[in-house]
Image (cartoon, rainbow, N blue to C red):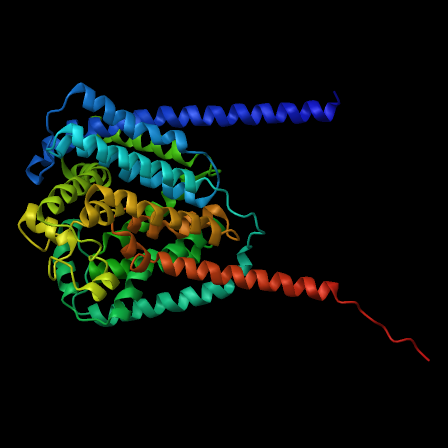
Length: 464
């Protein structure tokens, strides 16, 4: 055997061992994370927030083992890659899927013989998402920093326009408030009339435009973009009380650190979450700013996805399903939405908090699944979410994967917390797809024109 053949065989063996080790490590971290979420719920979330309906029902050891198994099994479908859709699937698994599986067992009061089928459908859905996300995107020449200038101008102009609209509408009540006092500011902002176009543009400011500025700044080290993003984030927070605007930079920095080479994103995310749970529950005291940090992370990040999914399943299963009439265009055709002017989140707020001012939005599994068609809705919405993951890999093939993940950070936050249609429209998903497609088309067109110029024969006239 030649030395080249031996070297090739050795390289493949090392690659195989590396891939196997990565999968084993991910599986172990996943199991530790499931244990960590359970511990956080029992050790902090349930005893501290039982008054807010974070209940903990008795269950058998068999049902607990089955829930653990179903929460863990989809990891078998995960394949490490540097494609951006893998980051979406990893975030869905970590921040939505695992908390939902455990919360269904802990807080939904139905026989486990029926509940397990709901958990199985969720597990099948997660397997599909992991499978679609690992389909490698087309390898294309990636854009350099100076090739973003036209997109910089377009997004910069739109961001400035949205900021101007924001200032014009909210100048009278703008102020810097604590997170505890943010709801008064939100009510004042909601009372200001605005057109549909203005509402969408302002929504895209946070989920699409500011996240683009942070992506440009962090990945290409353009610090002026980060400064511009911070100024717009602060303006948005002081105008509307949108916590997302303040948290978007830390989220972007966290995604940037977690990404590394892309292939280790899921195990790094799971490991960071396990470490955070242990520090918050075991080390930090229940007082002052530490209490606020524990509540934000353990309840808002870990607890809410499972809590809302459980309540959506119970409430809309009893009060009536929407059959997708909660989606604006569908209701415009059918006029069949059963809850009047109240959104799905407001219905849950009214049922569990006694006020429609509490708006408990929820992920696509809860809203487009449980509220729309009951448990079977999970199977209906899954192909649409899978299609979004496919588009992410397909449309952004000319963009660096890390940059794509950072730009889509705001959209990812929306996807985890609102219906799929809302994430695509108000959450900026469709806008990002359109802008990425436009940038890619321009880049491909420029390359083709350059190739044609190189292929054109040059003729010279001979002197007489």
